[in-house]
Image (tube, rainbow, N blue to C red; front, top):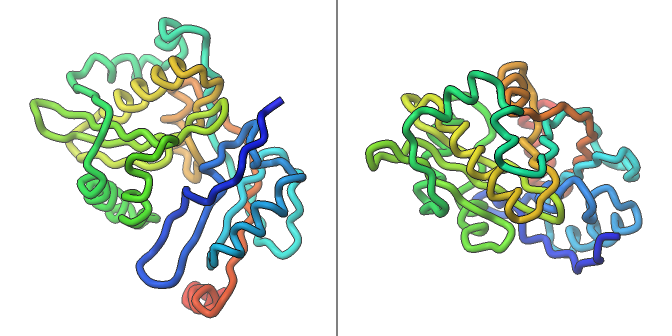
Length: 247
């Protein structure tokens, strides 16, 4: 049985201005309040008191109430961790093992502002969601967050932020230089080994919305799992966002 913990909405992405959003992903997909219907009202009440404009609940067990939420069916890739790090190469594909032979030095820690710049550089070019700088800075020094930096010849090649809760660690956000082929394999391998040392049972490689990222995650031994994303937006700023999106 998982010990009951007092909920805190410390893992949130906050945009500039009054619009704030929070996701339950930071509480893990296994064993915590996520998917626990008895604690759902507690989480919602805490979110209302905090004044969030948008709240997303990740429902891996398909048992949370969805009345009033926008429902999306999604897929995440999750690696069930083996007993020993020595077993990982056998789980990885040949391409991942070749990537690990490339010369990158991975260390824990990162400057949060430098992390944000690299994250924005990576994902703005892909025209996808960029986590706000305030959200990254807020996680710096948190007990549930671990930053990683990979370098080649003293030049930053990539960065990774992993969140941990209960028996799970999760690839939260990242960024890499275009020239640094193979760097994400190095970063994730180090994070997976650290998660195993901490006694984690699962490494969640996050939601997958396209075939390419899915193949990459499966090459690390992760399996696809279906889940539901329940989102709700409230207030005038949320209405303005819906109008801009044509909803």
